[in-house]
Length: 299
Image (cartoon, rainbow, N blue to C red; front, side, top):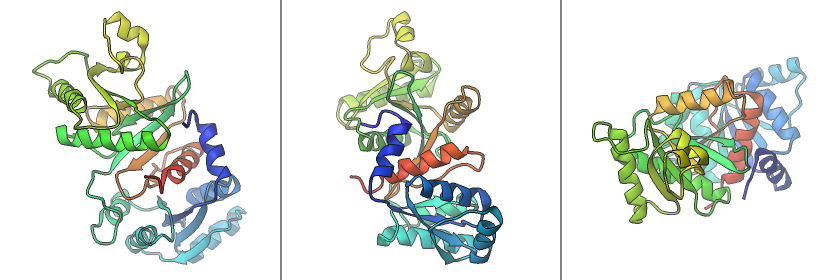
C-alpha cells in the first residue's frame, strides 16, 4: 500500500516507463514539468502541439527532453488525438497542457472517440496524513452540486482509486456541517442514505459513515468528545464533501495555508488523466503525473 508521496515516486521510477500524451504542450510551464518528470523517470512523453513553438521554447529555456513531438496546433484536435492514442494503447494516459479545461474534458467525454465509460468524471485531492497513509477529499473541482446518485458515484470513483493504491477497504466519511441528521439539511439526509446504501451492499469495497462533521471525521479526539462510535470517525481515508465549493476551499486551504502538497487525481474515465490547475505547484504537477501513471492500467 502506498503510504506517502516519496514511496509513490520511488515505485513509479522503479517500474517500466509508461507513455503520456501531453495536449497543447507548447507552454513553458508544461515543458519544464515534462523535462523534470523525464529526469525523475516518472514517464515517457508524447508532446502534441505547435512543433515550432515547442522547439523554440525548449531551445530558449535550455530544456532537454526525449519526448517525441506531434505537430497539431489546434487545441481541439490535439485533445482528440491524445484521447485516441490512449484508446489505441499508444499512450497510457493524457495530460492537460495550455488549453481550456472544457476542450480537454470534451475530448475525454466523447462517447465514440474519447475515454468515456458512462461514469461521472470526478476529481480527488490526495494528501498525506500526519500519522502515515493517504487521505482523499472529493469532489473538489468538477461536480458542482451532486445529488444522491452523483455522490454515490463520487464515492465509487474514490474507492477505485483507493484500491489501486493498496487500500483494501477504505473508510469513507460523508461530511456535512454537523454529525447528526437534520431534516432541514439535505446533505445530512444524503449522508445517512449513503451510509445505509453501503451497509446494504449498494456501494461496495468500503465502509461508509455519515453525516460526520469534518473534525470528527479526521480526529479521534473530536469524535470521542462528541460521543461518536464508528469505524470511520476519526480515521477516514476518504472525505466526501457536499459540494464543489466546500471541496475546493478545503483543498486550497490545505495547499495555501497549511502548505501541504496535494495531488489532483481525475478519475472516472477509462484511465486516470492528468488534469491540473495552472496555479498548481511544480511538485503538485509531478506528483499528479506519478499518481496517474501508477494507477493507469490497473483493474
